Length: 155
Image (cartoon, rainbow, N blue to C red):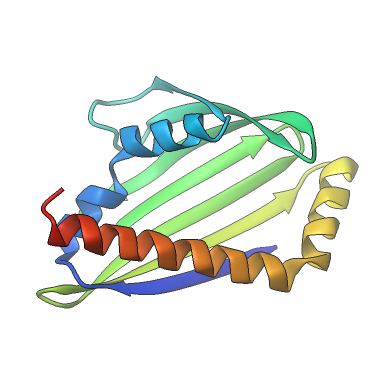
């Protein structure tokens, strides 16, 4: 299953990259939402090879997911590979400078099942795919507006 979304942000590409690569902020946000997150290893600041172990509830069951940053090319690309007991995922975050003060943020995600229970989970996601895609785009739009606000107010 694959899905993607993109948003244009009124901020320079280097600034957007810094905010998107603020992993400590994302770790804190995830913890506030009940996700157990810990950085296992990797360089500081995070770069290719950095790994996180997470535990989150999906459909009421705790799922362990390992996320590894596989590529980090400033200021244009971040790639991640995720793996759980029955599923693998890939995420690509790409930034494109549209002008000196405008950046396009694109996110592509794909999920692949390795087991029958994971296939069933993916199948249920596919049934609600249009709603899921809308939510994904809405969250990315909200995130883009937040980045713009942080840029405008120098946060």
